[in-house]
Image (cartoon, one colour):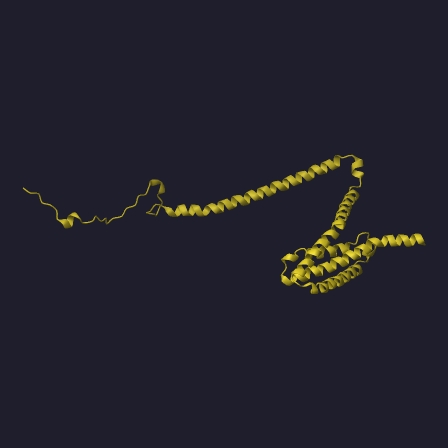
Length: 232
């Protein structure tokens, strides 16, 4: 007796599932959700930056408070030390000593600048003139130099009119301020546009040369006054 064989249509018919199911472990179950509960996981990721930001703010605030507390302690210790110091230390002219120290530092700085200014000014001026010669613009050089010299004279007279005390000062602070300002204009000369590289440094050279000449006359003035007083 032969056994009935299934037909080819039923043998090779693909399996299909009409029902879907999800695997949900017990520890991932949430109320009102039929999946794996991904949304709460994303929600926890979004809250992490807020928590870290709050921690950073609190840490910065606490560090600021610690520094302020340390500074207050340092001030209190210095006050206690000053109160317990002997009377000769309290009577010492600390303000005058600080003023003399600042004046000494300024004098040393001016001495260094006075001896280095002329060589640096000479080297930079030669470099700028060589650039103008390379660009075949030496004909235009005298114009900005003369204009700068005129501007230096105007600035000097204006400073003396605004502050007459500068006439009797030991240090020509107005000339030093003019020199510093136009040196800062002169230094970035290679970074100016084409015509700026030619005209602006030469204009600054005119101002600096005239200010240097005024400074030489300023420092020679006391010698002239002493010689006139001795002759009389």
